[in-house]
Amino acid sequence: MLEIKVTKTENPKTKPAPGTPLGFGKIFTDHMFIMNFDTGEGWHNARIVPYAPIPLDPASMCFHYGQEVFEGLKAYKRPDGKVSLFRPDKNFARLNVSNDRLCIPKIDEAFAIEATKLLVDIDKDWIPTGENESLYIRPFIIAVDPFVGVHPAHHLLFMIILSPSGAYYPEGIKPVKIFVEKNYVRAVVGGTGFTKAAANYAISLKAQDEAEKEGYIQVLWLDGVHRKYIEEVGAMNVFFVIGDEVITPMLQGSILGGVTRMSCIEICKDLGLKVSERLLSIDEVVEAAEKGTLKEAFGTGTAAVISPIGELKYGDKVIDVNGGKIGEISQKLYDTLTGIQWGKIPDKFGWTQCIGDCNCK
Ligand code: COI
Image 1 (cartoon, rainbow, N blue to C red):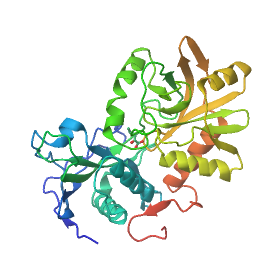
Image 2 (tube, rainbow, N blue to C red):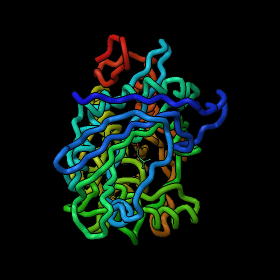
Image 3 (cartoon, rainbow, N blue to C red):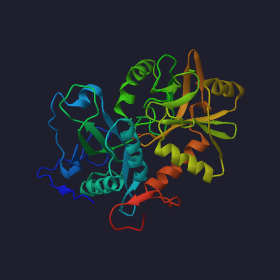
Image 4 (cartoon, protein in one colour):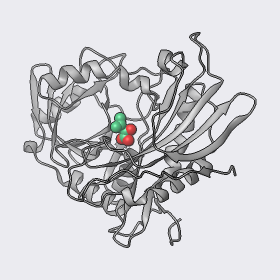
């Protein structure tokens, strides 16, 4: 495995005092990981250095054509003092799926996990321990060839930065209001919807901005062809509980295969719930709401964890979900998932990986 050269900062930053509201993704730790790719040499020069701006040529390809992919995972400080990561293997496997689609050279997944663990260990005193707080880990890769022609890059940077964060939405676990998007589309099969490419998020901003102006926190995307099948929410996958069926849109190439989505499906199965990955039209949701069989709706994501949906707006229809309250299944999933992540309940699934000397995988 490649060696990682470590240079520690001589000027550590002041950490937020316990109890300071952290928000999400606004504060960054003392160090960052960085590694270069150059055609002919492969990935090389892995290093952990003091967190700082990086000099980039204005012609760097990532600025012009968006050849960028990223991931999001979290580190948690457990009651026993150990630090754990949640399913990092899934994140780095997905990073390579994104890399493949964006013509970015693949990374060594096992090495990326080790690099993440080393970086988190160096900055472990930054891991917050307040309610809903964790250390958000953002790996990303950018194309840096100084070239304004459209072509896969020959020179790239793989970086990892860390951000002590609280809940993604200020609402925390309180239900959010979501706007069902009728005009704009996010992705179509054959595009990049299944990847974590920056471009997917750039093109979502307009719809999100318009939804926010109407008092909705994010949009629920419908499929780009029929404009009726539910896909995902801005920064989360989405689940609906209709009758006794827990439904989430199936992965067919236009939506993200979320790690939290996958984990919720596994927890639901373990709880003996009927869970389906299938096509779900917005009309089915509206009809269920009218008949009184729409029990719950919630988003899932690393950043957002479980985010109950209390209201949907679709055209001129305002759909109330569970009286705007968190539902039983959403609460159970939240408790199970965060219990495992924060090390408060046993991890019978074997999902957590502790850093350093521990009994976990
Ligand atoms: C995550 O949940 O980690 C994500 O990457 C979503 C992000 C756009 C905040």
